[in-house]
Image 1 (cartoon, rainbow, N blue to C red):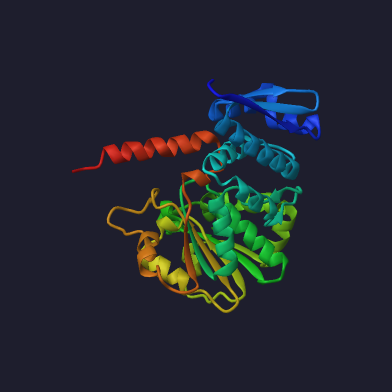
Image 2 (image 1 turned 90 degrees about the vertical axis):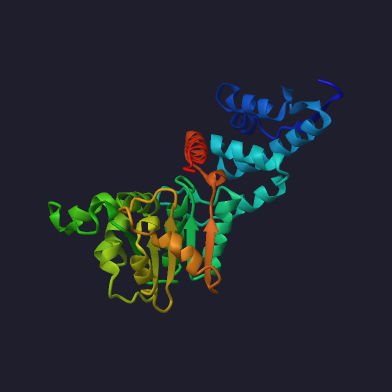
Length: 324
């Protein structure tokens, strides 16, 4: 390296550094590769070596990672890669905002927090608007974060019940031909919603709330003709609503209620010739006061790193195969 310098950071405790470095220095190797630096361990410090600009980025990154580990007690690959990207983009000072924002605590004691600035913007919008659209690819936390916000609002007695719904598009919302009772018919379409609720509330609490009618999970067709007061309503997979269904859902909103609509306009499963109500509503309600549209991107994906690469690959394929 030319113009090589070295700067040190004190180590408060070696366990913290071990967590940052990762098993067999897996995280450390990623950091060294991405920032083009070398890192040496001293008795009570680590020394960052490289070109001046790279060393300064390294100092900022390690300080940010120390805060993440101190707050979350762990450092997963998604946190690491996101922190690296924010340091490279000059946003490292904003990472503290993510750490401070706790939405709720799950039944197992896990704190649910936004993990990206896009998710933070989404959560803040939900706090300040009665209708929010969360639009983005799989893995961006659209539904899970909306669920967490609903549970917290319910616990704070801001609403009296939570209503979760999805269009059962695979069955054309004509569920009568499927075997079993109503619950057995709709379960396959609502399973992802159940899974999120089980994790946040715990199965026993969830079951108790359902029995008392405080939580309702139902296909979108069963919302027709109702007025939903003092409720937190989440419409998931909204890209699979028709224009008529979307209008029907939005006009169910009663006093003291809040609606969160989530969807991915790149994964529409409607029959050919049917327009997506989500794509249409973006144009229709774009400038209506009290309604906000938050567009999450691949940079907000918090699943396995391969999910982001898969989305990148599909985008590239679709962009190079557009019909003339």
